[in-house]
Image (cartoon, rainbow, N blue to C red; front, side):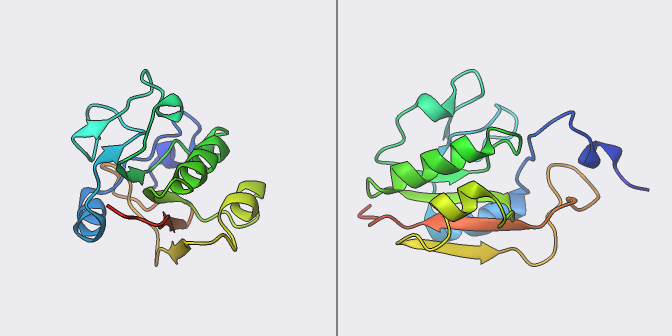
Length: 146
């Protein structure tokens, strides 16, 4: 039986699987989760929707960003790209939508960017079913002097 909420537009939040995050955190040592709720925050320092992480200062942080996957996704990708230009490490977990303008403008063929396509499909949050889309990690290495 499929989880109908995975295919609905009731939410654009897809909570990162803890085990998946833990493996990334071992590699990158994150300090900030700019798009979280109190219940799903992955770092001690985080911003909620009320805080509006898009307008917060992310400098001097090591960022893990799993943004809302709605129409504002492009704004989060742009913010991640821009903050990485200031020597900040950003790891972005997003749907693998290589046909989008933001992918070509802020990800594809950019300097100091690594793209990791996720094998299979993630099971977000407490879902027993996989996401209806493939995912990728976009790693903006900046110059990462931390």
